[in-house]
Figure (tube, protein in one colour):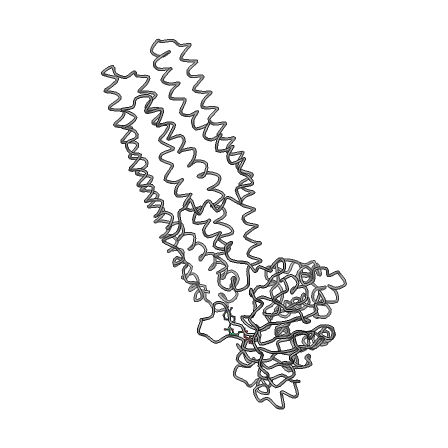
Amino acid sequence: MAETTRTPETDRTDPTRHSAVRSLLRLWPFVRPVRARLITAACVAVIASCIGLVIPLVLKWLVDGPVAERDPGGVWLGGGYVLLLGLAEALLFGLRRWLVARPLAGVEAAMREALYRHLQRLPVAFHDRWPSGQLLSRGTTDLQLLRMFLTFPLTFLLVNGTTILVGGVILLAQRWSLGLVLLAPVLPLMALCSVFEAKYGRAARRTQDQLGDLTTVVEESVLGIRIIKGFGRHRSQARAFKELTQRLRASELRKARLLAWIWGFNTALPEIAIGGALVLGTLQVADGALSAGTLVAFLSAALALRWPVESIGFLLAMSNEAAAATDRYFEVMDERARADDDGEGDANGDGGERTEGSDVGDSDSDSDDDAAGGLVFSGVEFRYPDAAPDSPPTLKDITLHIRPGETMALVGATGSGKTTLTALVPRLYDPTAGRITLDGRDLATLSRGEARALVAVAFEEPTLFSATAAENVLMGGEHAQESDLRRALRVAQADGFVDALPNGGATEVGEQGLSLSGGQRQRLALARAVVGRPRFLILDDPLSALDVHTEALVEAALRQVLATTTALVVAHRPSTVLLADRVALLSDGKITAVGTHHELLRDNPEYATLMSGEGEGAR
Ligand SMILES: Nc1ncnc2c1ncn2[C@@H]1O[C@H](COP(=O)(O)OP(=O)(O)OP(=O)(O)O)[C@@H](O)[C@H]1O
């Protein structure tokens, strides 16, 4: 949305960032498997480039020998040598390209896979903090930049450096005085390149961050196209987009300017030196101090060095873009995934500080809660990682016991923390204090995989994936069979509309399930939650988008499922509350009352107001 455009990320640019070389060295673990090919390719390129430098020596022999002696056979032979050398150079450069193309595409794919895997393992708190476009651009354009760097500049910085070195020796060996004239610009050029490198590195980083912001806006606009059109916000959205593109354009222009001046210096200084050497050499030939062949060889060697020198500017530019891309890639990869993601562990480090739970005048604070089965919250406190440090926690001292097989409704005004509390059970977040146990097992000691096997969730906002209706449902149960699918669809009252889809359950439901109605998506999400027959079921107002008739049907089927699980159901309507055995009232992050619907309706004015729909915050 135009108004929700994220703050430009240019301030992420760190002026004190470490050197490009240090950044690029971090690519080694990914490059290691293909190192043999890369080294072979680099050697082939160095040989090819050095062959190019032999051509001037053949020319010298040709001019001073067969040409001076007017020997046509020798001239043909010399011409043949030059042709063969040229062909060998071209073939070797082709071989280099072939050697690196496939393995480097593999490196890019491996890095992309590693990033995706890591993103899946990072906690929800990370995804709350990072704009999606920044992650997208890191997984796409940044990785392309890295592949280009590994294919081209990495090899050619080495090849050109070697060529310049060998060429310099050849020049000095031919005629050291002329060689010195030609090599005079080397020191100033090195100083200029170092200044350029630092400036370009910062500009590259800024540009890539801005590209990430732009990607975020595009993604939000595409996902929110209905809202944009519905509210006629396309103009303001386009304005916001234009502003970002202008910023990106300014950064790209700065890069182009920097590249233009380094290119200018890299071209002009060697040209001036070649001009000076030509004048000096001609005078020496005229004086008879130098053979014409040596001057020809000298100048052709100097001309052969022109490209390696001129190209250093853009090779450095590409290397700096790759260094910025590496930094951006590893900023995500360095984020710590939950230690317990694939195995055992304790996300809190200490399993969460144990605090005394408050007594809300209910048997929920039984001292033997820990040993008890069911779902037990003991003194749970939670604060969002990105909340202001002095703000009160979102959840305070939550102590609640949902007995095995019991269904507990969670009722509270909007913003009281209901969704937050339900998110703790599948370990989307970990409590900042206190603990949660599932059938007596501390949730903090369960791996996410174990917790996932025990708990299933259906959120208020049902998210579906670009897959078939059946695949979306089956995501909820690793070993679920066709019969489970049918049962889950029946429970969610989704079998009717799924069967009516053009290909039944095999129908693609489109990106985010947008080809379905809100109520249909909600029912598929509900089917996904129940398909795996979970031990614990967490439902966050899963019936809010259903019409009264369908809601009644879903509730009737749900009643059977709830009878076999331990469930926590966020409820806003009396009809949903009636599915539950007991109700917990959440008020400003605290459980203030627990009892049956009728008890609370009678004794608790806040609950009565919420259920009557009159409360200001009630939904
Ligand atoms: N990712 C987050 N970072 C920081 N604060 C958050 C985050 N998500 C929610 N909050 C805050 O936590 C509080 C509780 O939000 P929560 O979504 O749990 O309320 P809720 O009771 O489920 O509300 P509703 O009935 O409207 O869905 C709110 O003040 C909200 O602003």
